Image (cartoon, rainbow, N blue to C red):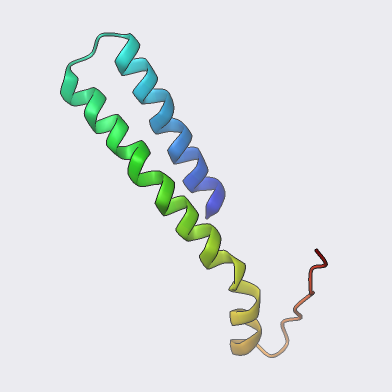
Length: 71
């Protein structure tokens, strides 16, 4: 889901830039900036959540193999 969240943040960033440069009503600019601001912590939350996904899946599905990543 992280790629979808990143695409959403990118879309709000583009919308913010377009509405700001295009002279759109101030409320449109504020809405697009709010979407961008709320999208950043949402994306970070998804990244943290997805880190443990393989471990959680291995606990519920014994046939699932967890491959340890080396730093």
